[in-house]
Structures are given as structure tokens and as C-alpha cells.
Length: 232
Image: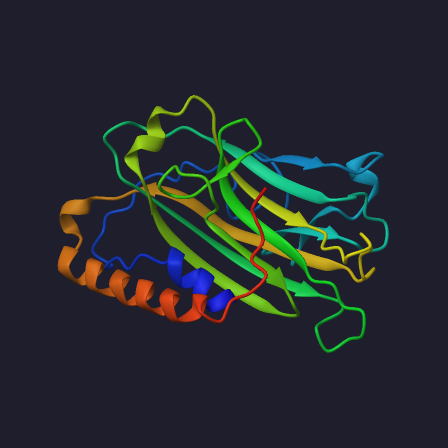
């Protein structure tokens, strides 16, 4: 499921595209802080008192969200997000790196997968994909260690949105009795960037050909996928 989900997101670009200033503030968390980002939890108490949001890996820090673990506050989800201001008539490339892990896996009795969602928001609570339609940029269950390196082009119609946000959300999974497995899950976020690109320098036939291969991979993967979650 993870590989087919990621294939849907990857748009191949040649290294010839010309990147400009990153619209995301503190996307690499280089100062080991959450400057520029907003944190949200449905838990109780002060965020600073728990382990829901942390900086890890100093001096090359990444942001880490945690749920279902010791001293975490969230009942349902923790979200890290930032507002984005896109310019009209400009093409943008969104990229980010994720690492996930869980204390328990499908090899453990009673395992209930927690999961994460990456999406664009408009202030309503709904999530959208790169085309501005309901859905997500990426979502997957967490079953042990997995890494994601994502690049996706954003539709230029998103520049017309009044309140556009990029959101990373980590959610608790629950069984039929609404119980979790009480095993912590982790979502690490790093190298988040939204850069304008010069589309004239992109090899379009190669781009579309490789993207077509990605879609073919999805078609094969979707036949084996069950239990897909809704983003919200």
C-alpha cells in the first residue's frame, strides 16, 4: 500500500528545472525549533508538557510528531501546519521527506496501525490533493520503519485560495471497540520546500512518460489494497 500510494505522488522532473526561494519557513528545522509552524492537538494540557511535538536529531534536526505513547496528549490526532502564499501564473514544486516508525508492528498481537496524512487545507478542516480536489497528498498506515521522499507539482489554481495551508497529521488507529494498541507511533518531517520552477526547462515527454509509469504502478497496487482510510 505504501509503495502504490507514494507512486501516485511522484512527478518526475529533470534536474534542469530552476528552483527559486522556498515559500516554506524553517522547512529544514535547521535551528531545531518550530519557528514558522503551528501545532495543533485534540489532547488536553499544555503542548510543551508532553511528547506530542519534538525536535530530534540535533544538530541536524527534524520535527517529530508522536501519538499513543507516554506523555502524549492527543486522543485522535496531532497536526503540524503552515500557511502558504502562492503567486498566480507560477508553477510550484512541493517536496518533503518523511520517516515513520511504530513501537509495535503487525508481527505483534493486538497491533492496531496508527496512520498519517499529508494534505493541503483551506481552513475548513478538509484535506485536498495537489490538484485542489478533496483527498490528500499522501496517507499511509504505520507498521514499523518506512521512509518517504516526495516531490509533486501543485496546480496553479491553488494560488486563488484565500487560506492555503500545508498540513502533516499523525492519527491514532483504533479497533472495533475504539481501543488503541498503546504502542507509540512517530512521524518525522524534514526538508519541506515549495519552490517555483521554470517549466520551460523541463523535458515534458520524459516527465509525462515517467508519470505514466507511476500511474501504471498504482493500478497494479490498488488491486491488492484493502481497508483504505479517508483523510478526514
